[in-house]
Image 1 (cartoon, rainbow, N blue to C red):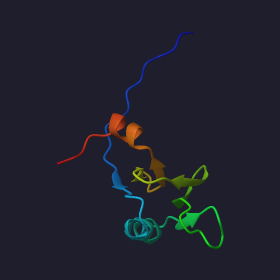
Image 2 (spheres, one colour):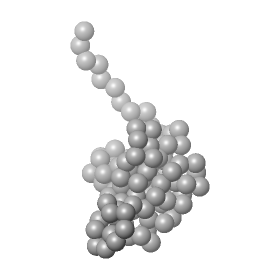
Image 3 (tube, rainbow, N blue to C red):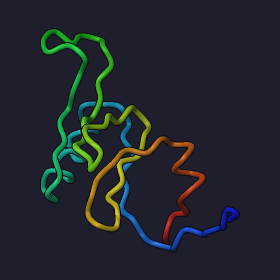
Image 4 (cartoon, helix red, strand yellow):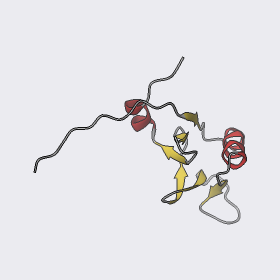
Amino acid sequence: MTAQKFRKKPVEIEAWQWDGTALGATPIINWINDSGGTATYWCDHATNCGDDPHFIRIRTLEGDMFTSPQDWVIRGVKGEFYPCRVDIFEATYDQVA
């Protein structure tokens, strides 16, 4: 048996790029939570985060995943949410007019 080739089916997704700020995280978190998902603004320290990096924590089908600044947050074809790195997003998706 040999490997077979496959092409991804063309599907439209919704996505939002996070700018890394708390202000920019708010509408993304609201979008996820209002659409049946679970997301929070998160840092590594429970108190006194200061200048420590912050993330958007998203509950996904595979467990909690963390969105870093400039990552895209995608709502998939079944309504699931997950983060996607910029380079992977740009290689995978074209913007719909």
